[in-house]
Image (cartoon, rainbow, N blue to C red; front, side):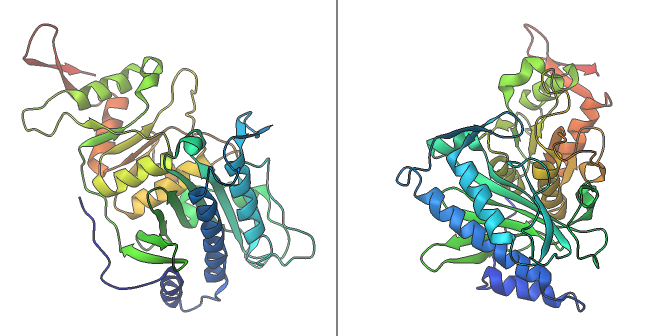
Length: 357
């Protein structure tokens, strides 16, 4: 796997300061925004590590804007991020997967030139069983940086290519922060004894091709035939030993993408008959993950076009996802677009036959 261990002892605070020096005209506002966000992550990590002891497992008894049951830790993480960010003067608005519409800042607070979009706790179905969950975030610059008014929906409905930063935090066996400001992808690990994130992998690069695929095969009967053929192809042994691929699926997008970033391969959450537009949310989950994958040298597609080129029309827009190693994603696109010959074993025969799709 293509992991480069950092040779320097660098905290997240120092790293943010070093990144700021790369921009001679930086005012420090963006750096302070990131520091406020790190505080929220530390608070969430503390509660996640004590889940089960602090009455934060289970459901709140309410539903979110999508009609999904809200878990206590979902609500806590959402509130912590809002409270950590609303008074800093760096933002003009926020949007959260757990909130309905734009989150406006309290009256009397200064309005900054950035917008924060976030999924406070990805992988809610895994919260109560101690499986990795995460927080996903994305930062945009408002359309008129000189404005001092509240941000608008127009400020937020932007292609993912206009993100100025994106990242996620994995709350697992350790707490890991992965983020990019458009200058590669860096990985930090949290030391709870010191209360610091330390740089552990500098300029992470995804392998050109992997040996693993990540998808919920329980939905296979609802997929398009082209996707079913692609998954069959990945499971069919090849003469060169490149296949079969191994299936790895956690059910937390952050965890599945984190593994793909390190080991290569492909993560997929496709459209199907029940979710014809896909299930993951473009702004809150897909764009930041696609930004990170591209910054690490990977490829991110909806099966037919680059994800970061999609212009969203609404906050809750969904999108099919195929992201990971560039060769793997390109191959998946070829199947979906019927441009790829594939091998399958004919019934009762050990010899592969080539079938055009």
